Image: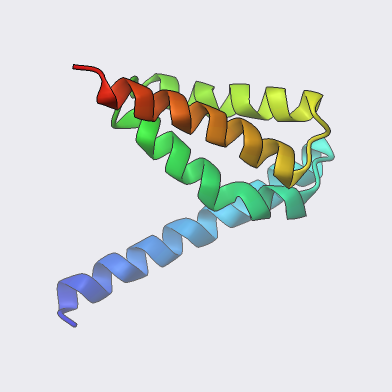
Length: 99
């Protein structure tokens, strides 16, 4: 592995650690179950990336917010979040298939 790859991997590890520390604080402040957030983090990061590189870059964080609102109305479980995220991912995929 090259030095550049090691640096990038180290930078990514640092960014993820910062993200997780931030999410710990936010969840504690808002009374949100951190376990649920941890379970769906990879799913939401993939969704945000797909939206940002597809239908709308500025719409990506707001899409995650809307998924969270919808999941909250459905019980705020990891399954509810994944279900809403999957529905939005289907919308993104459908847009990509359009000419």
